[in-house]
Image (spheres, rainbow, N blue to C red):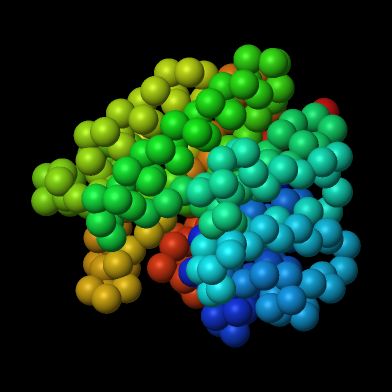
Length: 255
């Protein structure tokens, strides 16, 4: 089973840049999208009618902002789009889909760069999600968490750690949250297979940073430890363009 996650920075934009060709080549069992910037009615028709897939969409109250979606060959048993906290739920950042043998969390975590208020919003969102994730893990569920976490965990995860030490996305308190998340039993799947530097998932478009690979690894797949026996591979598709992020994914052994 292959599961892929991609912050597309606008599904309609990436659709025009060859998304369908890429999707048919990759043919994941589940695709999780973040920052779709579209509700169901505004999704490209070809995506809404993708043969062999079920499309699930969660959009925010603000038009053209945020949003997550999931394409799956198998329909989940149930889907939650809420933490039960209104200020988080109304931005369309949450999909928690329960399948027969695991629960998949597709989350678009907030960006904290805009203001001190948005940074606090991001940190509060982190805490709310941690409580939800711990609850699922402690109940014995097999949990997969994917999406744009908007924080690079360690110095190896961005090209210029010293220059960004005081920038949201690499602040000590943001990185400490990932430490807590990992120490609570969630495994960073990519680092199970690859400990090398230069493996990034986001680049600043304004400075043409992708051409120089001056990037950040801020898109992740985490799994609970009880899923590690099924984990075959984790990968980053740096060659795939169309967004300021690139796709990331995992392969799981079938039961």
